[in-house]
Length: 207
Image 1 (cartoon, rainbow, N blue to C red):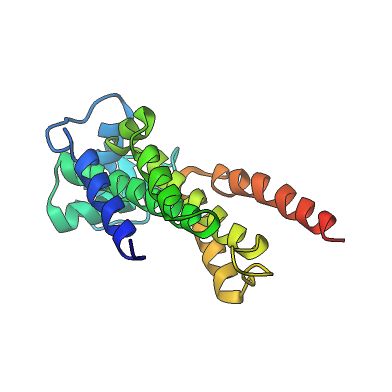
Image 2: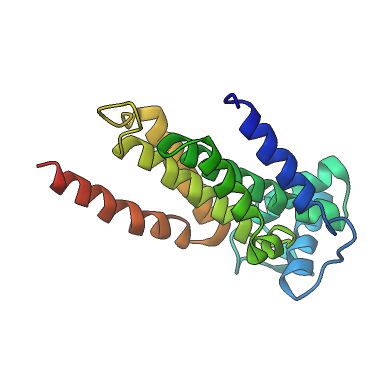
Protein backbone atom coordinates (compact mmCIF):
# COMPACT_ATOMS: atom_id res chain seq x y z
CA UNK A 1 0.00 0.00 0.00
CA UNK A 2 1.69 3.22 -1.12
CA UNK A 3 1.17 6.60 0.50
CA UNK A 4 -1.57 7.64 -1.93
CA UNK A 5 -3.88 4.67 -1.53
CA UNK A 6 -4.86 5.29 2.13
CA UNK A 7 -6.13 8.78 1.28
CA UNK A 8 -8.23 7.44 -1.59
CA UNK A 9 -9.53 4.60 0.58
CA UNK A 10 -10.52 6.86 3.48
CA UNK A 11 -12.14 9.39 1.14
CA UNK A 12 -14.09 6.74 -0.80
CA UNK A 13 -15.37 4.88 2.26
CA UNK A 14 -16.14 8.09 4.15
CA UNK A 15 -18.07 9.63 1.26
CA UNK A 16 -20.03 6.41 0.77
CA UNK A 17 -20.89 6.25 4.47
CA UNK A 18 -21.67 9.94 4.90
CA UNK A 19 -23.83 9.92 1.79
CA UNK A 20 -26.30 7.43 3.27
CA UNK A 21 -29.60 9.26 3.73
CA UNK A 22 -27.90 12.61 3.19
CA UNK A 23 -29.88 14.19 0.31
CA UNK A 24 -33.30 13.08 1.58
CA UNK A 25 -33.01 14.33 5.15
CA UNK A 26 -35.07 17.51 5.72
CA UNK A 27 -33.98 20.29 8.04
CA UNK A 28 -35.23 19.73 11.58
CA UNK A 29 -34.91 20.97 15.16
CA UNK A 30 -34.56 24.71 15.80
CA UNK A 31 -30.97 25.47 14.84
CA UNK A 32 -30.84 23.94 11.35
CA UNK A 33 -33.65 26.02 9.78
CA UNK A 34 -32.32 29.13 11.51
CA UNK A 35 -28.77 28.68 10.19
CA UNK A 36 -30.11 27.87 6.73
CA UNK A 37 -32.41 30.91 6.67
CA UNK A 38 -29.63 33.27 7.76
CA UNK A 39 -27.32 31.92 5.05
CA UNK A 40 -30.06 32.29 2.41
CA UNK A 41 -30.63 35.89 3.52
CA UNK A 42 -26.91 36.60 3.12
CA UNK A 43 -27.01 35.23 -0.40
CA UNK A 44 -30.15 37.07 -1.49
CA UNK A 45 -29.28 40.44 0.08
CA UNK A 46 -25.55 40.36 -0.64
CA UNK A 47 -24.84 41.37 2.97
CA UNK A 48 -22.33 38.81 4.24
CA UNK A 49 -21.24 40.95 7.19
CA UNK A 50 -24.40 41.38 9.28
CA UNK A 51 -26.35 38.12 9.76
CA UNK A 52 -30.13 38.57 9.88
CA UNK A 53 -33.02 36.27 10.64
CA UNK A 54 -36.57 37.42 9.86
CA UNK A 55 -35.30 41.00 9.47
CA UNK A 56 -33.73 41.01 12.94
CA UNK A 57 -30.06 40.86 13.93
CA UNK A 58 -28.84 37.30 14.41
CA UNK A 59 -25.60 37.82 16.30
CA UNK A 60 -26.11 35.20 19.02
CA UNK A 61 -24.01 32.72 17.00
CA UNK A 62 -20.67 33.28 15.20
CA UNK A 63 -20.80 33.77 11.46
CA UNK A 64 -18.57 31.07 9.93
CA UNK A 65 -21.32 28.48 9.54
CA UNK A 66 -23.52 31.01 7.77
CA UNK A 67 -20.70 31.85 5.36
CA UNK A 68 -20.03 28.18 4.59
CA UNK A 69 -23.70 27.54 3.90
CA UNK A 70 -24.05 30.66 1.77
CA UNK A 71 -21.06 29.61 -0.36
CA UNK A 72 -22.60 26.19 -0.91
CA UNK A 73 -25.93 27.84 -1.77
CA UNK A 74 -24.17 30.01 -4.34
CA UNK A 75 -22.50 26.99 -5.95
CA UNK A 76 -25.16 24.27 -5.68
CA UNK A 77 -28.38 26.20 -5.11
CA UNK A 78 -30.51 26.60 -1.99
CA UNK A 79 -31.41 23.18 -0.62
CA UNK A 80 -30.98 20.89 2.36
CA UNK A 81 -28.06 19.27 0.52
CA UNK A 82 -26.21 22.58 0.29
CA UNK A 83 -26.99 23.48 3.88
CA UNK A 84 -25.50 20.22 5.15
CA UNK A 85 -22.55 20.00 2.77
CA UNK A 86 -20.16 22.02 5.00
CA UNK A 87 -20.61 19.48 7.80
CA UNK A 88 -19.88 16.57 5.48
CA UNK A 89 -16.72 18.23 4.14
CA UNK A 90 -15.59 19.07 7.68
CA UNK A 91 -16.11 15.47 8.82
CA UNK A 92 -14.05 14.21 5.90
CA UNK A 93 -11.25 16.67 6.73
CA UNK A 94 -11.24 15.47 10.35
CA UNK A 95 -10.94 11.88 9.15
CA UNK A 96 -7.97 12.86 6.97
CA UNK A 97 -6.31 14.51 9.99
CA UNK A 98 -6.66 11.27 11.95
CA UNK A 99 -5.28 9.34 8.99
CA UNK A 100 -2.25 11.65 8.89
CA UNK A 101 -1.68 11.33 12.65
CA UNK A 102 -1.91 7.55 12.59
CA UNK A 103 0.45 7.26 9.63
CA UNK A 104 2.98 9.67 11.16
CA UNK A 105 3.25 8.18 14.64
CA UNK A 106 2.22 4.57 14.07
CA UNK A 107 1.65 3.04 10.64
CA UNK A 108 -0.67 3.20 7.65
CA UNK A 109 -3.23 0.61 8.86
CA UNK A 110 -3.52 2.44 12.19
CA UNK A 111 -4.22 5.71 10.40
CA UNK A 112 -6.85 4.13 8.15
CA UNK A 113 -8.59 2.41 11.07
CA UNK A 114 -8.57 5.62 13.14
CA UNK A 115 -10.09 7.64 10.31
CA UNK A 116 -12.78 5.11 9.44
CA UNK A 117 -13.59 4.42 13.10
CA UNK A 118 -14.19 8.12 13.56
CA UNK A 119 -16.48 8.37 10.55
CA UNK A 120 -18.35 5.28 11.73
CA UNK A 121 -19.19 6.70 15.16
CA UNK A 122 -22.90 7.29 15.73
CA UNK A 123 -22.58 10.86 17.00
CA UNK A 124 -20.19 11.76 14.17
CA UNK A 125 -22.71 10.41 11.69
CA UNK A 126 -25.42 12.58 13.24
CA UNK A 127 -23.29 15.74 13.32
CA UNK A 128 -22.06 15.20 9.76
CA UNK A 129 -25.69 15.26 8.59
CA UNK A 130 -26.57 18.36 10.62
CA UNK A 131 -26.60 21.94 9.35
CA UNK A 132 -24.81 23.09 12.51
CA UNK A 133 -21.23 24.28 13.23
CA UNK A 134 -20.08 21.35 15.39
CA UNK A 135 -18.46 19.30 12.62
CA UNK A 136 -16.62 22.37 11.33
CA UNK A 137 -15.35 23.23 14.82
CA UNK A 138 -14.11 19.65 15.27
CA UNK A 139 -12.18 19.76 11.99
CA UNK A 140 -10.55 23.10 12.82
CA UNK A 141 -9.53 22.02 16.34
CA UNK A 142 -8.25 18.65 15.14
CA UNK A 143 -6.03 20.11 12.42
CA UNK A 144 -4.71 22.86 14.70
CA UNK A 145 -3.84 20.30 17.36
CA UNK A 146 -2.20 17.99 14.84
CA UNK A 147 -0.03 20.72 13.33
CA UNK A 148 1.23 21.76 16.76
CA UNK A 149 1.77 18.14 17.83
CA UNK A 150 3.94 17.55 14.77
CA UNK A 151 6.11 20.47 15.87
CA UNK A 152 6.65 19.24 19.45
CA UNK A 153 6.70 15.45 19.11
CA UNK A 154 9.37 13.58 17.13
CA UNK A 155 8.14 11.59 14.18
CA UNK A 156 9.31 7.99 13.68
CA UNK A 157 12.74 7.94 12.08
CA UNK A 158 13.54 11.46 13.28
CA UNK A 159 15.58 12.45 16.32
CA UNK A 160 13.73 15.76 16.62
CA UNK A 161 10.22 17.00 15.80
CA UNK A 162 9.42 19.25 12.89
CA UNK A 163 10.14 22.90 13.60
CA UNK A 164 7.34 25.35 14.35
CA UNK A 165 7.98 27.54 11.34
CA UNK A 166 6.38 30.92 10.81
CA UNK A 167 4.11 29.50 8.12
CA UNK A 168 3.02 26.60 10.36
CA UNK A 169 2.38 28.95 13.29
CA UNK A 170 0.38 31.27 11.02
CA UNK A 171 -1.68 28.33 9.77
CA UNK A 172 -2.40 27.16 13.33
CA UNK A 173 -3.36 30.71 14.31
CA UNK A 174 -5.64 30.95 11.30
CA UNK A 175 -7.35 27.68 12.17
CA UNK A 176 -7.88 28.79 15.77
CA UNK A 177 -9.20 32.12 14.54
CA UNK A 178 -11.69 30.34 12.30
CA UNK A 179 -12.62 28.23 15.31
CA UNK A 180 -13.61 31.42 17.13
CA UNK A 181 -15.64 32.51 14.11
CA UNK A 182 -17.24 29.07 14.14
CA UNK A 183 -18.34 28.76 17.76
CA UNK A 184 -16.83 31.47 19.90
CA UNK A 185 -13.92 31.31 22.41
CA UNK A 186 -14.10 27.51 22.66
CA UNK A 187 -12.52 27.52 19.20
CA UNK A 188 -9.14 28.40 20.71
CA UNK A 189 -9.62 27.71 24.44
CA UNK A 190 -10.27 24.00 23.76
CA UNK A 191 -7.13 23.28 21.71
CA UNK A 192 -4.90 25.49 23.86
CA UNK A 193 -6.14 23.80 27.03
CA UNK A 194 -4.70 20.58 25.59
CA UNK A 195 -1.62 21.89 23.80
CA UNK A 196 -0.17 24.25 26.40
CA UNK A 197 0.12 21.72 29.28
CA UNK A 198 1.32 19.12 26.78
CA UNK A 199 4.07 21.38 25.42
CA UNK A 200 5.03 22.42 28.96
CA UNK A 201 5.33 18.80 30.13
CA UNK A 202 7.54 17.94 27.15
CA UNK A 203 9.75 20.97 27.80
CA UNK A 204 10.13 20.02 31.47
CA UNK A 205 10.91 16.38 30.60
CA UNK A 206 13.64 17.46 28.15
CA UNK A 207 15.53 19.51 30.74
